Length: 125
Image 1 (cartoon, rainbow, N blue to C red):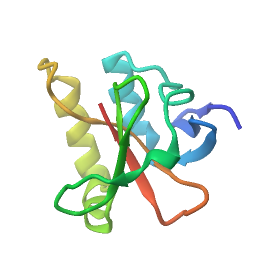
Image 2: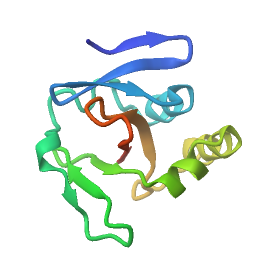
Image 3: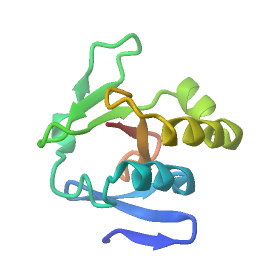
């Protein structure tokens, strides 16, 4: 299923060769727009087979896109609970939209991996 958009943003995002349902894209589409990130930014540049433990404090799996521009990382339950609150997301979008530092890392999409709907992944640019 190709990228499909409604008034609230993307419903589906093609990541590598996998169609993934997005989560709360109304917020993340604004970050992508301000940052000049196209909606198909991972369609040909990611391989789920490369996900492995990232060595971070949580041990969640992560991998980098083949073009080196993006990281895809599993979001643990605690972080997902905090991040998915609309109040937090609204403030986060405002903060990121005004950031001028090119080294500032931010989430630009959140999606569900269809083979494991319990695996919530996010992108960091």
